[in-house]
Image (cartoon, rainbow, N blue to C red):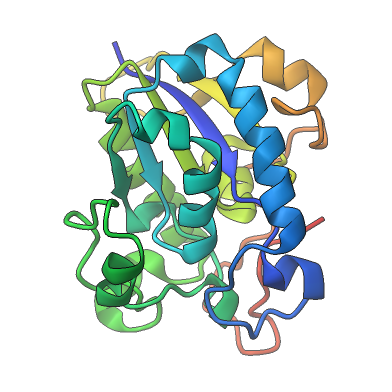
Length: 240
């Protein structure tokens, strides 16, 4: 049986607070640290989170920092933290472009970066086509990310990722900073069907585990550009 997924959006980072998308791979803000405390308390009380056997993080600093400040209690039990470039944010703005893996390894030595795509943090070259800012590439990347988890042996996996990728490509629901939603994989009608997620009523009805996110669903792929946008059109996913 495929795992249950707890999908977490990172806490507030510098680009969220300042609306400055030229900041490269920004850190969490003071408010972001406070939000992590609320997230941590909620996950500690969640029976499924208690059963998590793996933590997947987007290899950006704000997602890794969020994990370290919200599920440290799982890490202390020996639960592995694994970075996966498939879960990074959509746009190619500096705020959504990661740092070199060697620098991340030095800063976060307990995170396993061994499976990070060697092309990371490139998101624009032909070799990095999987990470291009187009609807086709982003939706395909989401399917790749979900397939990797579908085939995992763990029963519960926590993923710390980003608002626009989770909303527009993975789940079709909104995520406030440091909020989370819980999903199971939907049954497939036929082998080879797209991976789809079904949200638990607990987080669906109240708008996330902390009840801070908008309830209304959104169509997967909406707001994503069909072709590579120019500099004017290359905007991160809508934030709030």
